Length: 306
Length: 306
Image (cartoon, rainbow over all chains, first blue to last red; front, side, top):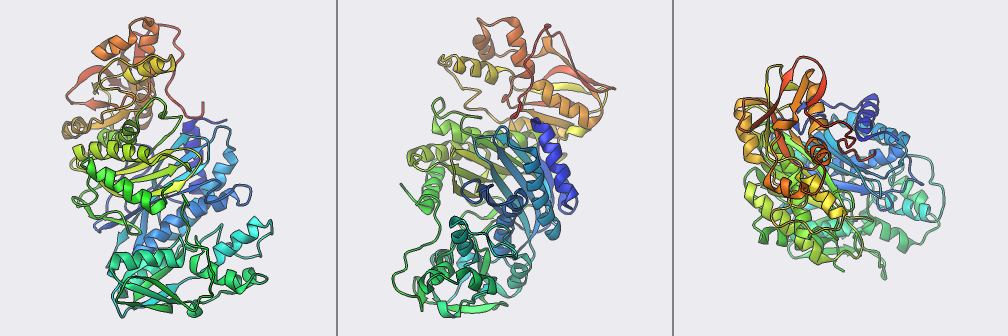
């Protein structure tokens, strides 16, 4: 088994081989010192998110490349939800003793490939021992105009969806049932952060959020922070071809559940003027109202401790 | 058991009750949105470091307050090693199901108390489920002058130590033997980040590192990055009163080991003009040479995977 510093070198090598950069852009000094050095003339959006084996992924279902991709993607999605341009990130890995170094190569490759696409520079990181594989990323993004905040929804705003809902939850049901996923990009294993859409939305709107814990739960954050009521018209929520394929054979109630409460979609919801599909409206009041939902639905947004 | 959002609220409340801030200074927008917003006119030093139950601490030996303190302290020490002033941090917690919420209060209190002392604002974070308690912090510090880099040591520089060495390793030996630690601040459980010393050193020197993995191993990073040889005169390394108390009853060879290779001290070593104790010199060449060390020592710096 390799030691800590060999692991770091090897990880960085695989990350760079996949196109990822460890210096340049806002990063004045990359990995290898006590700290990285980052410089930006703009306000920085800062987010941190962890993925843990057995919670956010399972190594017996997803490839190491997919795990590395997802660990970074969930953070870039938070930047997208703020309307920020990815600039730099740090990556802290907790790795069990005896963990296969080739898996680490795959994780680095998936992360490097995604980082390269969005020009997000790996500024530093940390390897620690532990009992389970966990990847905690902190991402920094530059805010070029107005940040998309949760507390900026106003009565009269349309609620605009960018991206697809329900696929990740439907895929999870397939995986739990031991079924192989249909071909095509997996929403569960390879979520696509909607960075460009977030940047565009930030030019015309002031309120937005990424949908990571389920549409209704995440809109609840907007309603609470903005002091408004958010009305979702479930019939207007588009169903992607992939979602239809995944949902066929399941009940309409189940499909509606996935759309309104499925987690890990990493779609964006913006209130105000934005490109996308209008799925509801902001009103005076409080809470989230779902119009057009079948009765008797129980599935709520994801909570790690419920 | 509380849910995810109750845990967040409770953690923030305990953090604030201990004096910690979640907004102000460089932090324009604190916890509660997709991202925090941070603004600084200076280059930012960025570091990420994790502490994991059973690796960096043990909840049956340390109090939750001490765990929270240590999780932040190891990151502030990295900022100190760069000569940066703490500004903001994010905190990602992985928490096992059924973990006592009162322990989380203690962790938040220890973290909040330390953060308050150094004006470091909690900008955001994340709670995730998992099998073991792990705390991953990413800290941002403002570089006011020259950053203390590992690659800036030059032949002729003195090697200057700030802080005490060996205490944390000696304490660990006590703990492993089931002995209660002597009274006073525990180096193992309550490491003190030498932030002010780092800031002062950055006004006169250009090279520095925090000693987290053992003096010789960490100086090895300086030697490699700077392309120099670092000579340590072990007889000149000061022994604190606490170290003498901890080492009494152990052999001189063991004591010397702790001084030169004990991890988790979070002292600073600076090369060049700086306040502190001169413990060696930089020469042309490569590697680290320890003068005055007893023969037959085996303990090396800490590696998570050896």
